[in-house]
Image 1 (cartoon, rainbow, N blue to C red):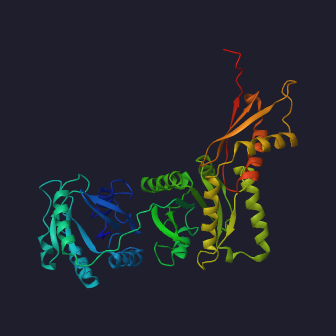
Image 2 (spheres, rainbow, N blue to C red; image 1 turned 180 degrees about the horizontal axis):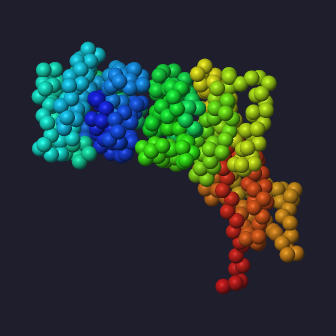
Length: 441
C-alpha cells in the first residue's frame, strides 16, 4: 500500500487533512501551533484511491521539542513513497521556503505542494514556492472538504509515475487493543519505544510531552496488537486549559476502545488516588487491567517488597479486584515484553466461556462454603447460574431474593468465580435475577 507523509509548518492544517483522509477524528485539531508532536498513521481514501497516510508534527526549530519532532519527520520521509507538503495559503510565510529547501535536501521522493485553507478567494497563492519544482500546487480546504477532486487527480498522476512496487500492508486487523494509561511523566512513551526498539514516540522528562492518543500496530511474536499511547491524565483541578482537557478526554476514550488497559505507575511515587480513579474507569468499562510499576531500577531493594504489598492492598481495598502487577524499567528495556504477554493472557480470559454445568457445580460449592445470612428468618437460595456474555465475562444468577443480597456477599461470589475460572485483572459482571413462578400470572 502506498505511503504518504503529510509535512509542513505548525498550524498548516496537517491533522485536519489527516482526519479528512482517514474519515474520522483520529487526531486532535487546534488552532494552537504544535499540538501534534508524535507521528500517527492511518488508512486514507479519496474515492477509489487507498493509501497509508502519516501525520507529523510541525517543522519548527524554535520549540523545546524541535529536534525530536524533526527526527520524527525524517523517519516519516524515509518510510513514505510520496510527500504532501502542506502550507497555509492564507499566510505567505518565508519559513516555508526554508522548509522547502530542507525537504529537497532530505529526500528525492515525489513531493506535492498543497495549499490549504482555500475556502475563500481571499487566500494567497503559493507562487513564491514555484522555484522548488514540486508537483502541484493543489488548492484545498481540508476543513470544508474542498478541492478533493483536484487532490485525487494530482495523486493519481503521482501513483502512475511511481515505478517502484510498494509492499502491501497486512490487512488483517489486530485482535487486541492495549491502552497505555497513567499520569504524566510515568514513562508511557519510553515503554513503547523500548518495545518497538526505536524512537517511535517523543519521550522527555518534561511532563505532558505526549499530547494526543497515538495508535501503533505492534507485531508480538507473530500476533498483531494495537498499542495506544495516551496523554497523561492529571486531576481535573490541575488541568490548565481546554486543550489539555481535550487530550485527557481522548485518553479516556482510548480506554473505551481498548480491550486491556495497562495502568502505568511511577515506582518512585507509588499508587495515588488519580491512579485508582483511572483503574476504576477501566474496570467500570469492563476492560482487563494490568498495573505496571515503571522505573523499578531506581527503587531500593529493601523497599521493593513494601511497595508491592502496598499496591496490592490498594487494588483489593479500593478497586475490589486483584490485578497483575509487573515491575519494569522502560528506559533499560527490563521486562517490557512480559507486559504484552500478560495482556494477551488477560485478553484470552476476557473471551473465555464457561459451561453451565461447571458453573452450577461451582455455585453449589461456593454457597456451601459460605452461605448468605438469613433475611428476616428466610434462607437465601442460589438456584442457577449461566454465562450470558464475554468482554467482560457476564453471568446471570437466579435466586429467590436478589434484592436482599448483601453487596459483600455478591463480591464474595464474584471474586470466587474469578479465582476458579479467570485470571487476575479480569472484571466480572454478576447479575442477580429472581426465579419466576410459572403458576403466577
